[in-house]
Image (cartoon, rainbow, N blue to C red; front, side, top):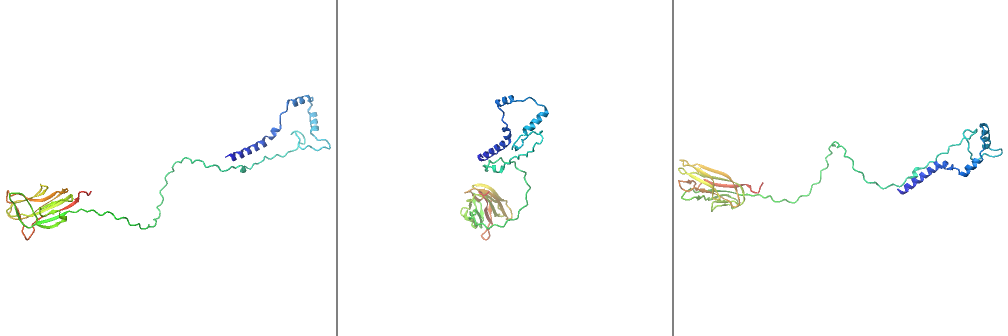
Length: 279
């Protein structure tokens, strides 16, 4: 910016000198010159004498050359025509300065209107097959199931009797104890249980499915001349170490269930439906 300002200042001074030169050449006269002029003033002349005198004064004498520069009045005869002095032209391009520093970034303008969505592009090429991922965790499944039967008949006595089963069809992980006749829960969740018996003619059938010493459901058949198959089923929510079994009612009345050594008439089954930790 310093070099550029210096050049512009020089150009302004040159233009000022050309424009004000003639005016500055006409310097005002001093007091002494004015007094001399007043002392030498001649008496006023008429118009004809003044023109003749001015003509002799400003006309060149014989044998003399005309001066190089001379003042003329526009009303004098034979006034020469002077050519107009052209105004000097300055090449502005030479005054161009160096490129300035970059200014600060301006404020962000307003957002324009959202344009319309463009056409959908072409489908790109299919990528390469990725690498195989790490093996996942093993699927955790929980199972619990049993199914047992009895081939011997059972009659009531003066005490409650736990029905003991002598035939094992399914006993997954040994959760059903064949010696005590009870199922022990080791996988908490919701279970389904089913009990099937064969009644004895002319005798009553009176059984309960028990849970931790409490009667849950009853299987009952009245005295009849015919023996029939009777069943009971239910679903229970069990916790860890809960117990489920079948109990024969005590003998206040003739109470029995029928079976023989050739066929299995009495069955008791159960299995896990849903684990307690599953959503």
